[in-house]
Length: 210
Image 1 (spheres, helix red, strand yellow):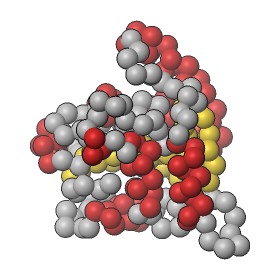
Image 2: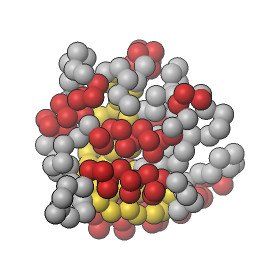
Image 3: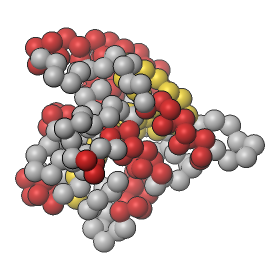
Image 4: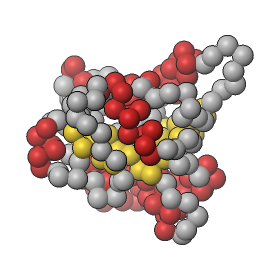
């Protein structure tokens, strides 16, 4: 599904997802950006994903947030965000789940393989239990095992899960490692800079979306 580039960025997810036609929502609210990131982008992956969610109508429920077990900040942000969305006399429409982090900052690549496989071990039963219609992720490595579990759900013929990836706005000239992994595996791949769209023809560029 591709929306016109003239669509206002605040509504682009409404436009795309309305055509996708999903109702259950599984996503990753991930770790914060490292201190070395640009200062004006230091709000982190969690803030970005919540801004994306703020563009969606209430019909996208329930929402299942998956957070790395060493993440100390995201749960509070999610709870604050959801409390502001909660309507009077309505029930909670979200859950928060935790899995092991795929890769810590500065962790060696060889040990990252082991930690990612460990995260996959926890992701498989979680995704198979939730059976989401869609996984929305935006960069942190923890979303890789979740997407792998979602793909396996489809391969086994149990359910087709749409994978929607939105590259972080801090990636201007090159994709993140997670983006490179999920570029060919995702159903919809959004970038926020035209320079990335030119390098990766599968990607969809709609300007800044967070």
